[in-house]
Length: 121
Image (cartoon, rainbow, N blue to C red):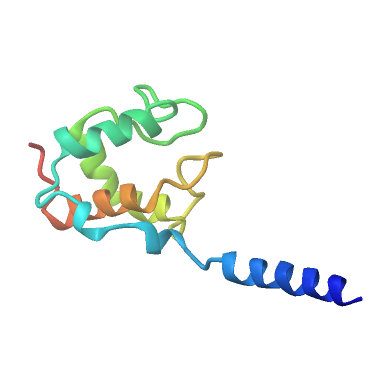
C-alpha cells in the first residue's frame, strides 16, 4: 500500500510541477517589432501569404475587395475594418476566412503599421 501511495504522490507532483500556464501573449516579445513598419517590407508579405488567395483581382470566394496593391490594403485598414477582422472582433467573420487566426505578432505588426501612418516604404 505504501508503494502505491508513493507512486501516486510522485505522479501527482510530476503533473503539478510540469503544468504551465503560458498563453500566446506570454510568448510574444513586443520589442521584436521593427521601429517603423512599412507596407513594402512588412505588410505586403503578410497579405501575399494570407489574403491573396481570396482577395485577388478580381476577388474570389466571396471576398468583397481586392488586397493586391498598397492602396487596396491601406483602404481596407481605413474603411473596411481590416485590423478588427484579423483580430476576430470586427464586423463579419474572422480573417483569413476558414483559417486559423494570424499569430498575435503578425496582427501587432499590422496594427503598428497603422499607428506608424500606413507608410508605403
